Amino acid sequence: MLESTTSRDADGFVTTSITGDGNLSIVVTTDQKGGSICSNGIKEVCPFCGRQDCYAACDDILELPTTDRDEACLSADARIPFNSAIDGMESLILAAACEGVDIGSAAFLKAIETTLDSIGNNFGE
Image (tube, rainbow, N blue to C red; front, top):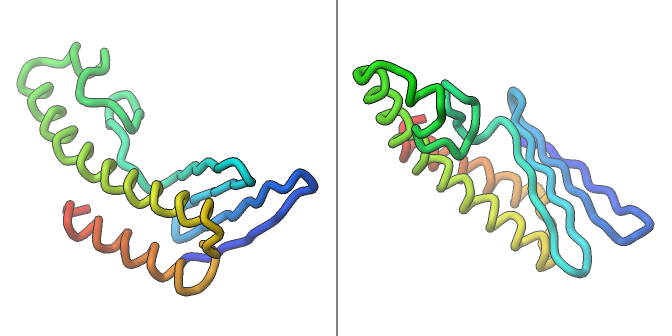
């Protein structure tokens, strides 16, 4: 179950923090000019270098024997589409926040949960 808190500072920045099970967190900050989003605990990381955006080209993978490198590439082949789907969800959350949608509302939080479940189901996570 996701929970949220929202705060507004004196400069007009609105920050909504969404947290869930484990270390899942999404922090969205907006003002009149746009916004930013930062998430943790959602995207899959490379098991070798720990980066989310590694396409099986990090130095740690390139130094592996060929059979292990092939396995690492298969891992990246599954991880990259999953992370791309999460990127799409994050973009929609940020766009909604920038347009004034209450992303901390119960209905929006439920929509995020449903989206995360669907992404997990579609990508076998």
